[in-house]
Length: 160
Image (cartoon, rainbow, N blue to C red; front, top):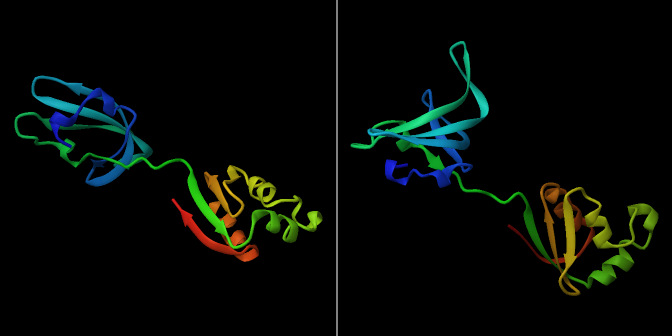
């Protein structure tokens, strides 16, 4: 990062910076500027040891006149959403899946595909037409995908 790119809007952003020769990740907590340098305080995701000491943060700095310093190693990380999205087009109507797969409620503990998907913690199912559903979740999405591929007929399945 260049000294001219540093501003208070960076606070709270995830980044990667150099510490004792290693690239480490963290969150920008503060910025400071004086006559000669601009600095960015990075709180590490995990403490890092150097010698006998444990460090929780570092100031990445850059000299204004020639960009010399550790600041030029600092890079913002792409912020990923906290959830995944799966778009599923089934080979048969969702109502037919409800009647066939979930015919025996005792086996699955629910009576519908929506009920089964929603029973996973952090996962939600929304039918957008008779063959298509949007499934969102923070985690458990791989298990849901594997189950859907095993027990239902799928025309297409896209994840993002």
